[in-house]
Length: 320
Image (cartoon, rainbow, N blue to C red):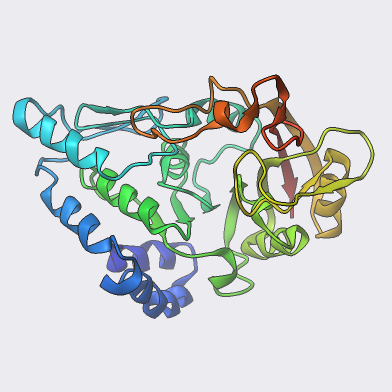
């Protein structure tokens, strides 16, 4: 499911041949016993209609792969892909099947792409990559190799479903957490951490780990929730935040910039601050569960249902 031989080749090309030590862990994480639904998901992948992966577009709002399926094959593909929900990130067009994901991830990518160094020829690490939407957009922007990591096995399966319609590309989604990578890689030209920091009990340790993955002079792209305010402060979250579990701490922008400097980053700049709206994150057929609208106070959209400040996201770019 992970194309280990191709992974080895792509890692060797960016100086990470030593990462073969991950093979055992990767096999463990994708073993039949790793998740109760994995046998069902494998069966879905095996039933996807065969096709020649001749058409592919990775530089448009919707990542588009595979030729246009028609008739029974398209209906079968749609039914099988729906069985892999929730589709959080997208949109995708797969064999002509349009996947309207919960997030309009293309909107975030527009904000990101205009703020970062060009990705042409760069080796990229995408931490918390989900189903690979952004990783594929990075490849579409010219990255020579993209290694995505995310511990959620369903997202790895979704990526394999997308890749079923693709010709081989140096893009991989691996079921790993950042701390499980070999330490001090210092190999990536650009490292992305988007929507990850607020899930860390120790955000400052996460930032140091991100820096350890960057080559000297490399670029970190950090996107995360922040707390309104001008001074260096943080809000410790008790219980849930916007119905999300495992949100631990929301820093102000000033504190976040200070953390980055303390972690050893230089030239820290804030590229964007945006309120998350229900147009960008919403319930769809492909993610039919509670979304942002259900997470906001119906009487005051500036507050979450729990009474915290509503989601506001900052995009920062920093150099090693």
